[in-house]
Amino acid sequence: MADPAMIAVRFALYAVLAAAFGLPLFALQALRGGERVVGTALRFRVGIVAAAGAGLAFSALWLALLAASMGDTPLAGVTGETVALLIDGTAIGAAWTARMAALTLMLPVASLGGRAPRTAFGLLAVAGAVALGSLAWTGHGAMDEGVRGWVHLLADLAHLLAAGAWIGALAAFLRFTFARAPDPVLAQRVLHGFASTGTLLVLLLLGTGLVNGWVLVGPDHLAALVTDDYGRLLLIKLALFAAMLALAAANRFRHTPALRATVDDPVRALAGLRRSLLAETTAALAILVLVAWLGMLSPPASA
Image (tube, rainbow, N blue to C red; front, side, top):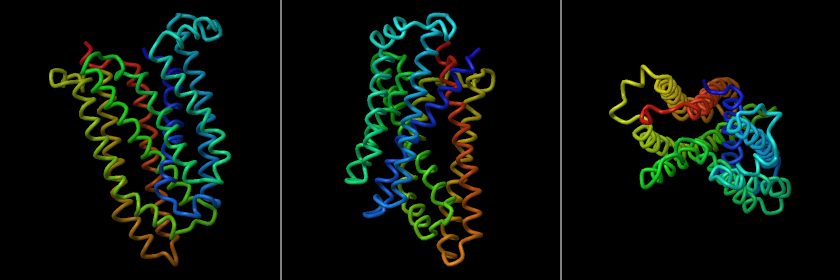
Protein backbone atom coordinates (compact mmCIF):
# COMPACT_ATOMS: atom_id res chain seq x y z
CA MET A 1 0.00 0.00 0.00
CA ALA A 2 1.30 3.46 -0.89
CA ASP A 3 2.54 5.58 2.01
CA PRO A 4 -0.05 8.33 2.72
CA ALA A 5 2.63 10.68 4.09
CA MET A 6 4.71 10.36 0.92
CA ILE A 7 1.63 10.87 -1.27
CA ALA A 8 0.75 14.03 0.68
CA VAL A 9 4.28 15.44 0.36
CA ARG A 10 4.46 14.57 -3.34
CA PHE A 11 1.14 16.34 -3.89
CA ALA A 12 2.41 19.41 -2.04
CA LEU A 13 5.56 19.43 -4.16
CA TYR A 14 3.63 19.20 -7.42
CA ALA A 15 1.36 22.06 -6.33
CA VAL A 16 3.96 24.52 -5.05
CA LEU A 17 6.49 23.83 -7.80
CA ALA A 18 3.79 24.25 -10.45
CA ALA A 19 3.06 27.67 -8.94
CA ALA A 20 6.77 28.51 -8.71
CA PHE A 21 7.08 27.94 -12.46
CA GLY A 22 3.64 28.94 -13.70
CA LEU A 23 3.32 32.30 -11.92
CA PRO A 24 6.49 33.95 -13.31
CA LEU A 25 5.79 32.48 -16.75
CA PHE A 26 2.30 33.96 -16.67
CA ALA A 27 3.58 37.34 -15.47
CA LEU A 28 6.14 37.37 -18.26
CA GLN A 29 3.50 36.60 -20.87
CA ALA A 30 0.43 38.44 -19.60
CA LEU A 31 1.63 41.60 -17.84
CA ARG A 32 2.70 44.61 -19.85
CA GLY A 33 5.26 47.32 -19.23
CA GLY A 34 4.57 49.07 -15.95
CA GLU A 35 2.23 46.27 -14.81
CA ARG A 36 5.36 44.22 -14.05
CA VAL A 37 6.37 46.81 -11.43
CA VAL A 38 3.16 47.96 -9.74
CA GLY A 39 1.00 46.20 -7.15
CA THR A 40 -0.06 43.33 -9.40
CA ALA A 41 3.54 42.26 -10.04
CA LEU A 42 4.42 42.71 -6.36
CA ARG A 43 1.69 40.27 -5.39
CA PHE A 44 2.99 37.85 -8.01
CA ARG A 45 6.48 38.07 -6.53
CA VAL A 46 5.14 37.46 -3.02
CA GLY A 47 3.37 34.35 -4.30
CA ILE A 48 6.54 33.15 -6.03
CA VAL A 49 8.61 33.63 -2.85
CA ALA A 50 5.99 31.67 -0.88
CA ALA A 51 5.96 28.86 -3.46
CA ALA A 52 9.77 28.66 -3.59
CA GLY A 53 10.06 28.64 0.21
CA ALA A 54 7.42 25.93 0.51
CA GLY A 55 9.18 24.00 -2.24
CA LEU A 56 12.43 24.02 -0.24
CA ALA A 57 10.67 22.80 2.91
CA PHE A 58 8.66 20.05 1.19
CA SER A 59 11.71 18.92 -0.81
CA ALA A 60 13.69 18.47 2.41
CA LEU A 61 10.82 16.51 3.96
CA TRP A 62 10.42 14.38 0.82
CA LEU A 63 14.11 13.44 0.85
CA ALA A 64 13.90 12.47 4.53
CA LEU A 65 10.82 10.32 3.87
CA LEU A 66 12.54 8.66 0.91
CA ALA A 67 15.63 7.92 3.02
CA ALA A 68 13.42 6.46 5.74
CA SER A 69 11.60 4.28 3.22
CA MET A 70 14.81 3.03 1.60
CA GLY A 71 16.37 2.30 4.98
CA ASP A 72 13.16 0.80 6.38
CA THR A 73 13.43 3.06 9.42
CA PRO A 74 11.09 5.61 11.04
CA LEU A 75 11.54 9.22 9.99
CA ALA A 76 13.18 10.06 13.33
CA GLY A 77 15.79 7.36 12.69
CA VAL A 78 17.08 8.79 9.40
CA THR A 79 20.78 9.65 9.65
CA GLY A 80 22.77 12.30 7.82
CA GLU A 81 24.94 9.55 6.34
CA THR A 82 21.91 7.90 4.70
CA VAL A 83 20.71 11.20 3.26
CA ALA A 84 24.20 12.07 1.97
CA LEU A 85 24.49 8.69 0.27
CA LEU A 86 21.12 9.24 -1.40
CA ILE A 87 22.12 12.72 -2.61
CA ASP A 88 25.59 11.79 -3.84
CA GLY A 89 24.95 8.38 -5.30
CA THR A 90 21.71 8.58 -7.27
CA ALA A 91 20.11 10.45 -10.17
CA ILE A 92 17.26 11.32 -7.82
CA GLY A 93 19.79 13.00 -5.53
CA ALA A 94 21.26 15.01 -8.41
CA ALA A 95 17.77 16.15 -9.44
CA TRP A 96 16.99 17.08 -5.83
CA THR A 97 20.20 19.12 -5.58
CA ALA A 98 19.36 20.99 -8.80
CA ARG A 99 15.86 21.68 -7.46
CA MET A 100 17.13 23.06 -4.17
CA ALA A 101 19.63 25.30 -5.96
CA ALA A 102 16.96 26.63 -8.34
CA LEU A 103 14.49 27.32 -5.53
CA THR A 104 17.16 29.02 -3.41
CA LEU A 105 18.03 31.28 -6.36
CA MET A 106 14.38 32.25 -6.76
CA LEU A 107 14.12 33.80 -3.29
CA PRO A 108 16.44 36.81 -3.82
CA VAL A 109 15.47 37.24 -7.47
CA ALA A 110 11.75 37.43 -6.61
CA SER A 111 12.37 39.68 -3.62
CA LEU A 112 14.55 42.18 -5.51
CA GLY A 113 13.06 41.82 -8.99
CA GLY A 114 11.32 45.23 -9.12
CA ARG A 115 14.30 47.00 -10.67
CA ALA A 116 14.43 44.85 -13.83
CA PRO A 117 11.08 43.04 -13.76
CA ARG A 118 11.17 41.45 -17.20
CA THR A 119 14.61 39.98 -16.59
CA ALA A 120 13.61 38.91 -13.09
CA PHE A 121 10.47 37.13 -14.23
CA GLY A 122 12.46 35.46 -17.01
CA LEU A 123 15.06 34.15 -14.54
CA LEU A 124 12.30 33.05 -12.18
CA ALA A 125 10.53 31.14 -14.96
CA VAL A 126 13.76 29.34 -15.91
CA ALA A 127 14.56 28.48 -12.28
CA GLY A 128 10.97 27.38 -11.74
CA ALA A 129 11.19 25.13 -14.81
CA VAL A 130 14.32 23.48 -13.40
CA ALA A 131 12.64 22.96 -10.01
CA LEU A 132 9.42 21.55 -11.45
CA GLY A 133 11.18 19.54 -14.14
CA SER A 134 13.34 17.83 -11.52
CA LEU A 135 10.23 15.92 -10.42
CA ALA A 136 10.42 13.93 -13.66
CA TRP A 137 13.39 12.08 -12.14
CA THR A 138 11.26 10.94 -9.18
CA GLY A 139 8.57 9.21 -11.24
CA HIS A 140 8.15 6.33 -13.66
CA GLY A 141 9.77 8.27 -16.50
CA ALA A 142 13.22 7.85 -14.96
CA MET A 143 12.92 4.05 -14.61
CA ASP A 144 13.16 3.02 -18.27
CA GLU A 145 16.43 2.70 -20.16
CA GLY A 146 17.66 3.37 -23.67
CA VAL A 147 15.64 5.25 -26.27
CA ARG A 148 12.36 4.27 -24.63
CA GLY A 149 13.62 5.73 -21.35
CA TRP A 150 14.60 9.06 -22.90
CA VAL A 151 11.31 9.36 -24.79
CA HIS A 152 9.36 8.66 -21.60
CA LEU A 153 11.47 11.05 -19.51
CA LEU A 154 11.15 13.89 -22.04
CA ALA A 155 7.40 13.31 -22.29
CA ASP A 156 7.16 13.44 -18.49
CA LEU A 157 9.18 16.64 -18.43
CA ALA A 158 7.05 18.35 -21.07
CA HIS A 159 3.87 17.14 -19.35
CA LEU A 160 5.01 18.61 -16.02
CA LEU A 161 5.89 21.99 -17.51
CA ALA A 162 2.63 22.25 -19.45
CA ALA A 163 0.64 21.37 -16.33
CA GLY A 164 2.65 23.89 -14.30
CA ALA A 165 1.95 26.64 -16.80
CA TRP A 166 -1.79 25.89 -16.64
CA ILE A 167 -1.88 25.75 -12.85
CA GLY A 168 0.11 28.97 -12.58
CA ALA A 169 -2.36 30.66 -14.90
CA LEU A 170 -5.26 29.45 -12.76
CA ALA A 171 -3.60 30.89 -9.66
CA ALA A 172 -3.17 34.22 -11.46
CA PHE A 173 -6.77 34.27 -12.70
CA LEU A 174 -8.02 33.63 -9.19
CA ARG A 175 -5.88 36.52 -7.96
CA PHE A 176 -7.34 38.86 -10.60
CA THR A 177 -10.96 37.87 -10.09
CA PHE A 178 -10.96 37.62 -6.27
CA ALA A 179 -9.11 40.90 -5.65
CA ARG A 180 -10.77 43.29 -3.21
CA ALA A 181 -11.29 45.75 -6.03
CA PRO A 182 -11.10 43.62 -9.20
CA ASP A 183 -10.11 45.32 -12.42
CA PRO A 184 -12.52 43.82 -14.99
CA VAL A 185 -10.63 45.33 -17.93
CA LEU A 186 -7.33 43.75 -16.84
CA ALA A 187 -9.03 40.46 -15.94
CA GLN A 188 -10.75 40.29 -19.31
CA ARG A 189 -7.53 41.10 -21.15
CA VAL A 190 -5.39 38.47 -19.47
CA LEU A 191 -8.11 35.83 -19.79
CA HIS A 192 -8.56 36.57 -23.47
CA GLY A 193 -4.81 36.78 -24.05
CA PHE A 194 -4.22 33.36 -22.51
CA ALA A 195 -6.57 31.63 -24.97
CA SER A 196 -3.95 30.71 -27.60
CA THR A 197 -1.43 29.69 -24.95
CA GLY A 198 -4.08 27.58 -23.25
CA THR A 199 -4.82 25.76 -26.51
CA LEU A 200 -1.12 24.99 -26.96
CA LEU A 201 -0.89 23.67 -23.39
CA VAL A 202 -3.88 21.39 -23.91
CA LEU A 203 -2.34 19.95 -27.10
CA LEU A 204 0.96 19.42 -25.31
CA LEU A 205 -0.75 17.71 -22.36
CA LEU A 206 -2.74 15.46 -24.68
CA GLY A 207 0.30 14.51 -26.77
CA THR A 208 2.61 13.77 -23.86
CA GLY A 209 -0.23 12.05 -21.99
CA LEU A 210 -0.67 9.67 -24.92
CA VAL A 211 3.06 8.88 -24.92
CA ASN A 212 3.03 8.24 -21.18
CA GLY A 213 -0.12 6.13 -21.45
CA TRP A 214 1.40 4.03 -24.21
CA VAL A 215 4.55 3.39 -22.14
CA LEU A 216 2.88 2.84 -18.76
CA VAL A 217 -0.24 0.95 -19.87
CA GLY A 218 0.18 -0.04 -23.50
CA PRO A 219 -2.27 -1.79 -25.82
CA ASP A 220 -1.65 -5.18 -24.19
CA HIS A 221 -2.85 -4.05 -20.75
CA LEU A 222 -6.00 -2.06 -21.50
CA ALA A 223 -8.09 -4.40 -19.32
CA ALA A 224 -6.07 -3.18 -16.34
CA LEU A 225 -7.77 0.20 -16.66
CA VAL A 226 -10.78 -1.29 -14.90
CA THR A 227 -9.22 -4.16 -12.91
CA ASP A 228 -6.10 -2.52 -11.47
CA ASP A 229 -5.79 0.30 -8.90
CA TYR A 230 -3.42 2.16 -11.20
CA GLY A 231 -5.85 1.88 -14.11
CA ARG A 232 -8.87 3.03 -12.11
CA LEU A 233 -7.01 6.05 -10.72
CA LEU A 234 -5.84 6.88 -14.24
CA LEU A 235 -9.43 6.82 -15.52
CA ILE A 236 -10.49 9.18 -12.73
CA LYS A 237 -7.61 11.48 -13.66
CA LEU A 238 -8.73 11.48 -17.31
CA ALA A 239 -12.32 12.28 -16.27
CA LEU A 240 -11.11 15.23 -14.18
CA PHE A 241 -8.97 16.45 -17.08
CA ALA A 242 -12.02 16.32 -19.35
CA ALA A 243 -13.90 18.38 -16.76
CA MET A 244 -11.07 20.94 -16.74
CA LEU A 245 -11.27 21.18 -20.52
CA ALA A 246 -15.02 21.81 -20.35
CA LEU A 247 -14.57 24.49 -17.68
CA ALA A 248 -11.74 26.14 -19.59
CA ALA A 249 -13.93 26.22 -22.70
CA ALA A 250 -16.72 27.83 -20.68
CA ASN A 251 -14.29 30.46 -19.42
CA ARG A 252 -13.07 31.21 -22.93
CA PHE A 253 -16.33 31.20 -24.86
CA ARG A 254 -18.87 32.23 -22.21
CA HIS A 255 -17.52 33.94 -19.11
CA THR A 256 -14.77 36.05 -20.71
CA PRO A 257 -17.07 37.47 -23.45
CA ALA A 258 -19.70 38.14 -20.76
CA LEU A 259 -17.12 40.06 -18.73
CA ARG A 260 -16.20 42.14 -21.77
CA ALA A 261 -19.85 42.85 -22.55
CA THR A 262 -20.61 43.99 -18.99
CA VAL A 263 -17.32 45.73 -18.16
CA ASP A 264 -19.18 48.73 -16.67
CA ASP A 265 -21.16 46.46 -14.30
CA PRO A 266 -19.21 43.21 -14.05
CA VAL A 267 -20.63 41.79 -10.82
CA ARG A 268 -22.72 38.98 -12.36
CA ALA A 269 -20.10 38.11 -14.97
CA LEU A 270 -17.38 37.97 -12.32
CA ALA A 271 -19.52 35.73 -10.09
CA GLY A 272 -19.91 33.15 -12.87
CA LEU A 273 -16.22 33.36 -13.76
CA ARG A 274 -15.19 32.89 -10.13
CA ARG A 275 -17.32 29.77 -9.75
CA SER A 276 -15.90 28.30 -12.94
CA LEU A 277 -12.29 29.09 -11.97
CA LEU A 278 -12.76 27.59 -8.50
CA ALA A 279 -14.20 24.42 -10.01
CA GLU A 280 -11.34 24.19 -12.53
CA THR A 281 -8.74 24.74 -9.81
CA THR A 282 -10.37 22.10 -7.60
CA ALA A 283 -10.20 19.62 -10.47
CA ALA A 284 -6.54 20.52 -11.07
CA LEU A 285 -5.64 19.94 -7.41
CA ALA A 286 -7.51 16.62 -7.41
CA ILE A 287 -5.48 15.59 -10.47
CA LEU A 288 -2.26 16.44 -8.61
CA VAL A 289 -3.36 14.19 -5.74
CA LEU A 290 -3.91 11.37 -8.23
CA VAL A 291 -0.55 12.02 -9.92
CA ALA A 292 1.19 11.87 -6.53
CA TRP A 293 -0.61 8.59 -5.79
CA LEU A 294 -0.03 7.05 -9.23
CA GLY A 295 3.70 7.69 -8.90
CA MET A 296 3.74 5.33 -5.92
CA LEU A 297 2.04 2.45 -7.77
CA SER A 298 3.36 -0.01 -10.34
CA PRO A 299 1.88 0.67 -13.80
CA PRO A 300 0.26 -2.21 -15.73
CA ALA A 301 3.05 -2.36 -18.31
CA SER A 302 5.57 -3.24 -15.57
CA ALA A 303 3.68 -6.39 -14.61
